[in-house]
Amino acid sequence: MTVGLEHYLTVSAMLFCLGLLGVILRRNVLVIYMSLELMLNAANLALVAFSRFNENLTGQMMVFFIITVAAAEVAVGLALIVALYRKRQSAHVEDLTSLKL
Amino acid sequence: MAFPDILFYICAFLTLLFGALVVANPFSRNPVTSAMFLVLTIISMSGLFLLLNAFFLATVQILVYAGAVMVLFLFVIMLLDLKEEQRRKINLFGIVTGTASVAGLGVLLWGTIWSQRSPANPDLKLIGDTKALGLELFTKGQFLLPFEIVSVLLLVAMVGVILLSKKELK
Image 1 (cartoon, each protein chain N blue to C red):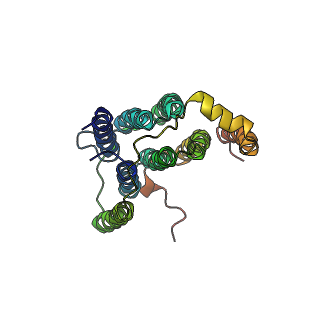
Image 2: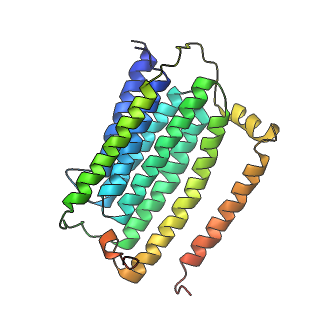
Image 3: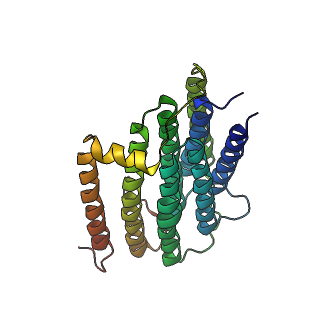
């Protein structure tokens, strides 16, 4: 079977599910953040596949912007995690529950 | 089977394998191992980008993600001085419901993707190289405003990070 749009979308969906599983199941803030990056990359893969099979460069432009914004987002998020760690001395989500009722 | 198809299956398998090892590694629960496997995931995914003729994005993926972002991650992991994550009591209810909802989402996506086959179109001529993307970005006028906004966003992110990293948060 020749590889078409469906195959790329399937890989993207599976990668997205893996990332979501990581966000739900892991307890380390940094690993959760890495799983988020995995989900972002899965969305990028789907956009590039759509762009290729519709012969339209707009999807790739969108991925270009997503990568730029993701770099900024990682910088800010990691700074937040470091600030949080300095206050609490823990990177474990179960120790960060001051908003819990 | 054609050669690009074999390459697709190899790259897809490696991407999913390394992605699974980021999330759940049976041998090590160290965040550094997860970060390293995330680098491998990103590199094999840029192989997929190459197969999709997105040459510029494949390069940017390796340079920005595997280079800059992951170095930032490793830097923070070293800064935090995390010990080997000790096992805590597992919340069985959370694991079961989480896995079930992710499986539901997966089934939903699978069904949507395969419900309608797109027509086979072997002669695709779109090439996403630097020239094509540069022309699209700078000459159409369609992306000029987003481009400027992104530059401001990067500046804002830099200022925000410096502010967050100061000794005392006010």
